[in-house]
Image (cartoon, rainbow, N blue to C red):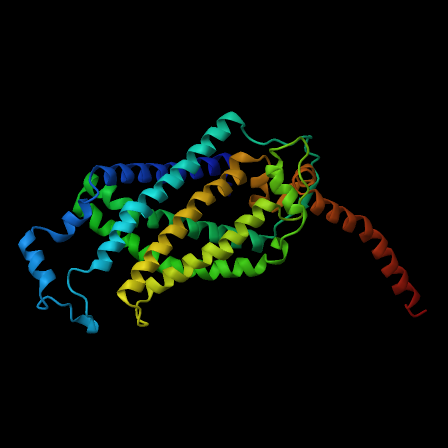
Length: 346
C-alpha cells in the first residue's frame, strides 16, 4: 500500500523549513551584532599589530601565486568583508525574518482565503505530470540551495559555537559541496522552466487590475486572471531576472578557471548573496499562498487538477477559455464525423 503525503503533512514540513530559516537568521544576526569582528579575529589568529604594519609597508609580503600583485593586506578584500558583514548578512536576515513575520501575522488575522462557493466536484486539468515534476524539482533544488546558502553565510555563528569544530568542519565541507554542485543543476532546470512557461506569463492589461486589487484583497470581487495571474507572473519574471543573475554569479564563483580576478569574485559573491536572499524572502510568500494562504491552491501542484469553483474564482478568464473549448468540442466532433461519413466508400 503506497502512502500519500497529505496537504497537512506538507504544511508541517514547509513550516519546519521556514522556522529553520528564521532561527538561523535570528541567531546569526544577534551574534554579528554582539561582535562584528568575530570573524576577522578567527582569521588572523595571534598576529600582532607590528606584524601587520610590516606586511602593509613593504614589498616582502607580496602574494606571488598565480602572478598576483596583491599585498597580503588586501584592501579590496577588507572592503568586501565589511560590505558582507555590515550590509548583506544583516539585511538579508531582516528581509527573510520580516517577510516571515508579516506572513504569520497575516495568517493569524486573515486566515486562509476560502472559496466563495462550494466545490462542484468537477475537476479541470491545470498542470500535467511533466509540468508538476519540473516544478517540484526546481522547488526542491531551491530549498536545498537556500538552506546550504544560509549555512554558508550564517552557520559559523550558530553551529560552530554550539557543536564545536569537530562537527562544524565536516558540516560546512558537505554544505559547500552540495551548494556548489546543485547550483549548475538548478540553473539548467530554471532555464527549462522559464522556456516552458514563457507564453503563459506574458504581461496582459488585466494584470494591472489584478495588482490594483491586491489579488483580491482590495474590493469584493476577485480580479480577472488568465491561466497565470499577476502575482504568478511577477514571481516568474523575478526568477527570469534575479534568478538568472544568481545563477550566472554562482557559476563565476563555481568555476574560477577563466581568468576572473579576485575583485571580480568578491563582487560576484556580493551580488549572488543579495539576489539569493531577496529570492528567499519572496519565495516565502509564494510558498504561503500555495499552501496555507489559499484554499485549493496546493491541489493544483499535488494532483494537477483544480475544482471548477476554484478555477472560476481565481482564474476566471482561463476558466471561460476552458469552458468555451468544452462547449465547441462536441460540435467539432460532429462535423468531423459527418465529413468522414461523406467520404467513406459505399
